[in-house]
Amino acid sequence: WRDNYRLIGRGRTSNSLLPAATVHQALGYISGCCLLIRQTICQQVGYFDERYFAYFEETDLCRRVRRAGWKLEYVPEAVAWHRVAATAQYLSKTYLYYMLRNKLLFARSTLKRGAFLIYFLLVYAPRNILGYLYLSLRRHRTANAKTIFQAVRDGVQRRYGRRPI
Image 1 (tube, rainbow, N blue to C red):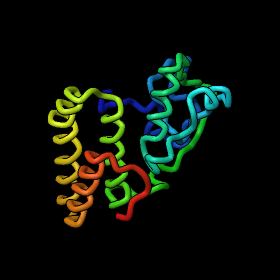
Image 2 (cartoon, one colour; image 1 turned 45 degrees about the vertical axis):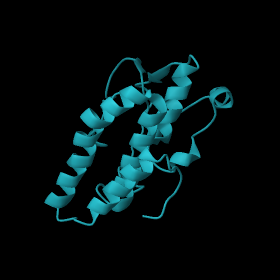
Image 3 (cartoon, one colour; image 1 turned 90 degrees about the vertical axis):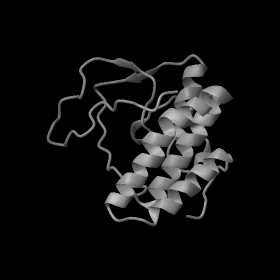
Image 4 (spheres, helix red, strand yellow; image 1 turned 135 degrees about the vertical axis):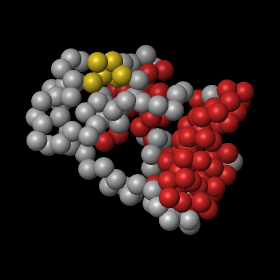
């Protein structure tokens, strides 16, 4: 599992009515803000894993769908407008906790122990822990540091579900 992705059409405004891409494309992941799925697929692989509560539940579902042999596809004729940060504002304690914890939980569930340790040390820690600490401190949100370390601790200890923040 890689810690990078590309969102088709990200940053486009409602003034642009043309599709972000003009051809159907196979994808490895589809954002939950616009995910259409057949009921038969959900009956086969299950629904969103509610243990994630927020963030990464669609990533987990997409992984299970692909493992079951189904394809994920971008359809340019379908258009959806998504209001970003409806669940939580960027860099809020809620955003940081669930994004960091669930990214870690997802990685733990998909990688073997050795690969997870390499991912944690070389990708997750510098990009996520240090990156979000830097952004939070730069914006004078020092209280976020506690939330960041709480999220990492809970992710390492495999604590799922809605948690008090």
